[in-house]
Length: 153
Image (cartoon, rainbow, N blue to C red; front, side):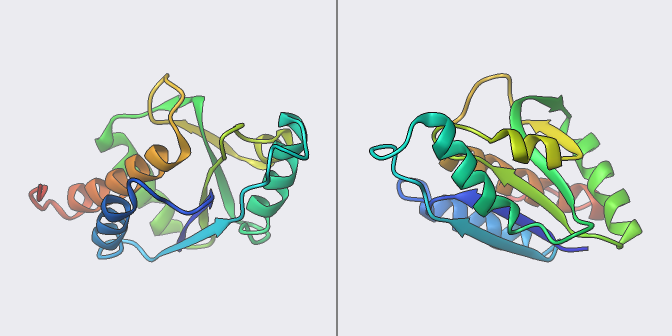
């Protein structure tokens, strides 16, 4: 199993923290990050932006991959529950797990329909850069939980 983080845009303000937690998480899980280009809202309406970015994001998911849409309407999990779920997916080892983080206008209907699961980090809408940081930190935390290691701050 490989974890793929498919996200719109490159991090700016939180780039250092994102890189740090993605590197920490990579000690526990094979991680690949796929950043897709943002679509300019100057030329398209919000729905068209979501659809175009959604097409790019879904290209990151190989056939058979478990697509997880990161969305405020999704399932909330405690860190320990997330770690257990991720470990079960690792034990299956038959497919990649692709976490999809939408851009400024959110996720397209095509991404939502392809996703087998929707995962919420909070009931709030988070900027996509912050959502990526939260996901990276939780992947790192899940690794420490699975191995029974203390969480390094």
